[in-house]
Length: 450
Image 1 (cartoon, rainbow, N blue to C red):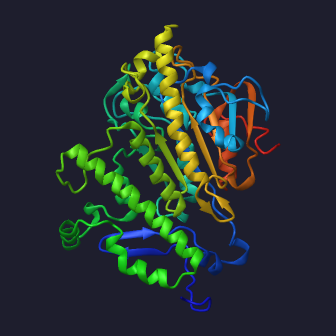
Image 2: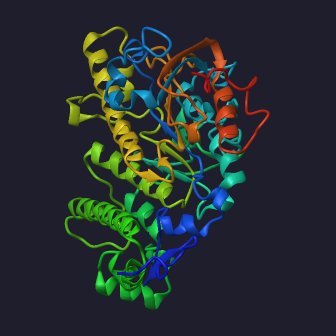
């Protein structure tokens, strides 16, 4: 066993490398010991924005009381184990998602405005125009610290051209992340493509000789870095070896799940970059959440967006007994059967999000967990799907931003308080102080108060 004097000190940017593979490492004690003492225990703040379409059944979302003693309503019940890490925020709105003279198109506007607070130009042509989204403001300022400035993911890929909502371009409905006023970031919906991006296994980025080796061996990405891994393990202390073993096991588990789903979808046909995703929605969403956890854990990015489905989605959720399309039944007009189905969908989405929060909470990070050092926003650009309103949106914030945010409360703000005010707080906590975003009027009060 290596003695303390023999053990290596590691740079935070250390990678395991092999045949076309490059695996970033999680934070290890050996990295902290090589860093300046002042910064050794300081973890970066991560930001994730999780989007659900078509609004919610408001009565099943909103706690009946304010403050610390609130009871989680039906939709939020899956988050019960992490109630103390949550802020449920009522009264927040996106005024610029309203028609403002542009007629129909509430779904397109809901997604386009959600992270920008800017009223989009109504067009289905090339002259799309929106605002820069909060995730990209953060990415532009802190992205240089990481391998990727941001990740944009989805469970329902869609086109970014053509007419998707009464004269609004599909770009508005299918992306919530905007790099510039005219450039949406297309979200990636293929788990394999995301995995390969994070771990350097994408054959499209390899030279011909390496690509042929990868095809020939068809091994786990961990097999390609085996020599580097074994060398590193010999030089680590017992705590770091445990952390590394757990991390590599997590990678292999995710890789195996992706491979299994590819074989099911492709009928055992091998593809270089399979255009497939799990047929089971829960497995699909959880894979995408797991990939975000790995990205945060290895500090490959500190910013992500994830559309659990595109706005206006008409996906059926047969896994929970809902055979009608989500968008169609969201116009329930008081029909009790349709309301029941929407409640099932709302709860099902929340169960997947609760899985993400559990994973973040269970992942060590510096002097706490990933959840302790993150701000995870979950919500929709529509409040009640039956009426297409954009006020009193369903919004919750999980995580503590390194101790700045004081959670475990339901906070009710004045009606029509700009949601973008919350984003100013989040940017400030991530080290990106910003004076104005969309229709913001200033930071929210009470987030850092008990």
